[in-house]
Image (cartoon, rainbow, N blue to C red):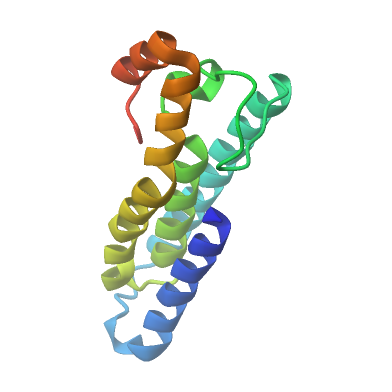
Length: 143
């Protein structure tokens, strides 16, 4: 489950902070910037959840959707929940002032893309065909 992966990567960032405290920059602006990213990530997740509920379809990975979401936040990103996860991770890393741990963000995104997104998109393409293919052509995976 993606939330478990997010928790693991947050734990790694926290551990990195504890293991290498001397790497902190002390830049005060990192804390509000980090929390702003966390809030933005949570907002993206919330907007996606609203679309799932509005369209009476599942948000559980690997379950078959009953509707194809391409409105609301889905006009801007194909994966607002996963993007929100990445923003939460990046935000916590900034707020904790452990900038070297930012390397975890692209690793997390690559892992989520391989383990979840690719399969989900294959399922959507099989179920919704040309409609999905056209939307995929217009809307980027992340941003």
